[in-house]
Image (cartoon, rainbow, N blue to C red):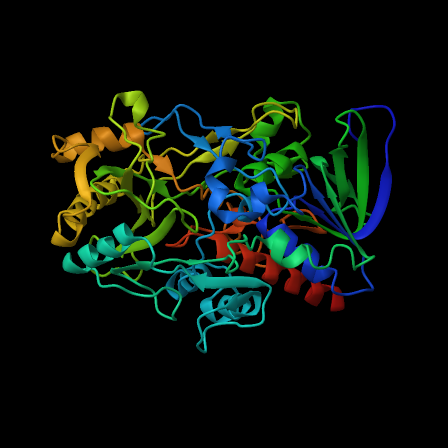
Length: 532
């Protein structure tokens, strides 16, 4: 039991899902399709039902640093931007309800690399059919689904600066492509696909999976405003540890309760809070748990390790013509490139933004504008790894998030980022952008050498908000693998993880759709194991 005394509530379900994140909503919806099981989903944030702040995709940037955002600071960085903050969703649907809706099928090559690393059953032939199942894609082809809950569609080419940018990218050797057409784009640029309806409504997993069924399934209970404190782990009749439920802080922020799981607990709190909750529940690196006086139930050294992220730079121009005043989501074009030979996935990606993006440059004195555009090179296959650690034993305290950007010993990440800054400039120097590109505001035309670019990048970079891999899955002989390929937490029966923390490493694209597929696969495996 929790240390807290006083009035408690106690409920029992077959499955309890701790966290209404991107994958958690999928798991809840799929498990509750079986009327013979009961499912309870607990989410600390509010519901998004009828909330246009969440559902209108074009307004997504207003959600950053808002009441819908946990807004995690990062620890002081050895070689990166210590002012950076990680936006993490505090709302039903997780980051699919909070971030932009860039929708990429996971690259086949990355999934096959997961399987080769010991994640049996996670290769492309296993995962891509789940993508087809979840999507209703406006594009047509054998690799597209057309009757899933999540609408995907191409962004229409209505931004004239974006049209010119694609022409410039082609002139620089990056042909115009369409994404999610069955092949991984190594070098090319195109309009994104997004998970959004034609009217601009966000197709988060809460909107797509839960909204249609929440009031129709008596076996499904979705509780928002319930802040999970820890997973309840107890010895079973045979002495083996088993997850038997979760404890939570009630919406009144006074009372505490417990929900019991007859079959399984699924943890879907995201790559920052999932390792935190594991540690608060006695599952994690023994030395760290002992530091805070927590009982060590399972010494799991990989919990909170292996933090992977897409680090993002910025090249920012003043615009010579008025930029668009309406957009699907303001970030509408992707550019992929390889910076070396022999790569099977791109190691560099850029997002094109039709808005000023000065949140990390103004503090250093770089000029800004009300009418500008930018390219944001990011390192898709970074080698730097960070950590998530406890700040205290109080579940209300933010954990210590240390991404350790640009700390890989070989300097790979900074080399790729430097190449990305140069490539962004090369694209915008092409003649199709002559009518649009004014003064380069950041880093500015005087920043030309590798050392000058590195100094600028390490001070001003952002994140693409893709923290992942902090409770990774892996083979039995991988001592840092927190869960097995069936997402079962090692050392504790009846406990699985379904969110981006289980990835062994990040794919080369935005992981929104990949995380939805993780939810689909988790639900499948739970149902399969229940039948055994």
